[in-house]
Amino acid sequence: MPPHITDKIDILGILLDRVDYEKASQRVMEFLETPGAKIVVTPNAEIIMAAQKDERLKAAINGADLSLPDGIGVVLASKLLGCPLEERTTGFDLMMRLLKMAEERGYSVFLLGAKPGVAEEAARNIKKRFPGIKIAGTHHGYFDEAGEEKVVGIINEARPDLLFVAMGAPKQELFMARNRDKLNCRVAMGVGGSLDVLSGKVRRAPVLMQKAGLEWLYRLLTQPSRFRRMGALPMFLVKVIFNRRK
Ligand code: UDP
Image (cartoon, rainbow, N blue to C red; front, side):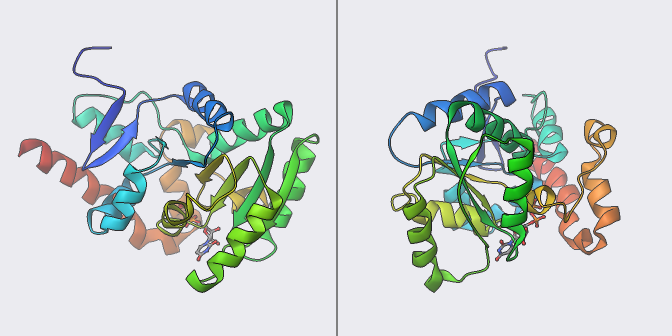
């Protein structure tokens, strides 16, 4: 690795770890063997843009133990900054690897997030794919801050090793940061809309589109309501170029 390239990359004040799936899984396995809850986040261009205006979100991401670059926008930005990341590491793909490892090594998982019933459906599908896995519990992601204590209590009673938090940004990052010291798990990881995909409610882009860096286009075509949100991607790249010049 050239000397100017370090194991962390700073994109608009957000720190990202330069890791591939292999290294990321290894880090999570280490976290699973050490006491205290560790936090894993996967910022994409949209989240990094949101963090520019939200100090709490920025602190939640930069305070995480592992921060993975998700999305083609972040990979392009790294190239513009002259310290290229080889690939994006999506929350969904890391989650699938971790589920496999959890099955092999006997770690239990809790699924938190999405609309009522979705986490249970996702759990059934996960069980079909990884029959030996221990699902410690599930809970939907629609509760307010007043209901949060109760949800944390439910998670803690289930004592999972791995907690997947699928409530979308910034809700999931803020939930994990706020409850870090209260959560009785080893790893809490934000996974966005992954439970919708695992339940079969939403389909992921075809692999060829994913490999071509066009997953955003597939999501735009299948969920046109995301159009406004996607405006963040070009704005993000413009901001990276502008900041680089400065
Ligand atoms: N969600 C939730 N609680 C909320 C708001 C959203 O559990 O208060 C869920 C929502 O049902 C969906 C996920 O969070 O399953 C967000 O999905 P999205 O596709 O927006 O996330 P992305 O993968 O783009 O981060």
